[in-house]
Amino acid sequence: MITPRFDNVIHAPNRLRICAILAAVDSADFSTVRDGIGVSDSVLSKHIASLHASGYVAIRKSSCGARTRTTLSLSPAGRRAFKEHVSALHAITENNPQRR
Image (cartoon, rainbow, N blue to C red; front, side):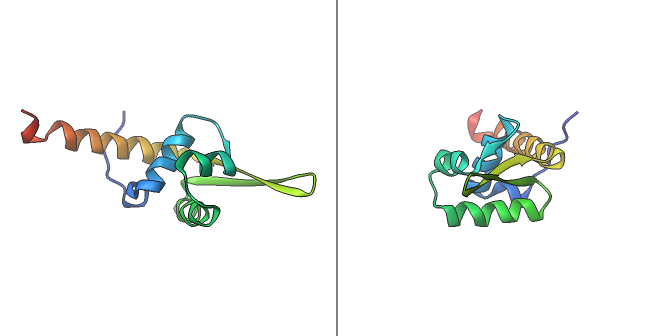
């Protein structure tokens, strides 16, 4: 069962979008996530660092010829936190008195 829990780390718009992309897949290349949310490498790196420091995103680097390939994935804690955060957002919007 998912317990609604608002998470300030995930709530920032770009971090929420990163988590949404990663929740839909096992893993994604850095460039795929960057293009998916439409930010620069440095902006994505900053948000990934925050998510990684919280234990929500795993970072894997591998060599691909002369280039380093960075793959991102949600950790089990990250998947749980994202689901709980989305559940909390649903609870907020479902209890909105203006919708009645």
